[in-house]
Length: 140
Image (cartoon, rainbow, N blue to C red; front, top):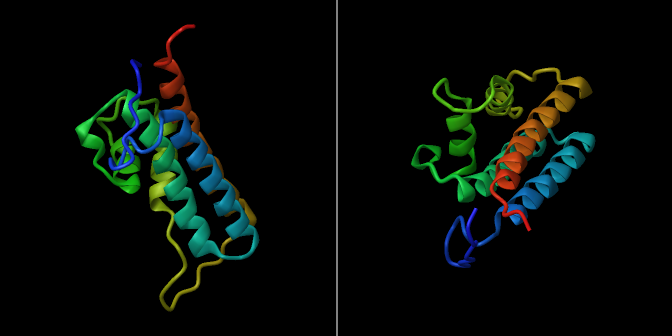
């Protein structure tokens, strides 16, 4: 991957690729805790942030302007038809993007299985980001 240079003032380079992966995993743990506490709004936001944070790590090692700058833009770019990622990753990105927090007058019934599916989709995106990051590490 070449040598990583940290830049605390840069939105992407303030963390290393591995640190972004760890940040995504930590955010996913917070999302799981939110779902378990019955806070679907925080859980949905968390799975989206978790996937996007991990993708920041991949974006450092494989820069791509089409990914945008925000976590959701990253996930949206990988969900698209033109994305050069496996279909399973695109499907996981679509699942994460389509997750809607509760709101409005209609209260959707959500089961633990629904939450588990979102968490697994976010894990799949994080796993893809991890593979991309590891593929670019130097052999020591």
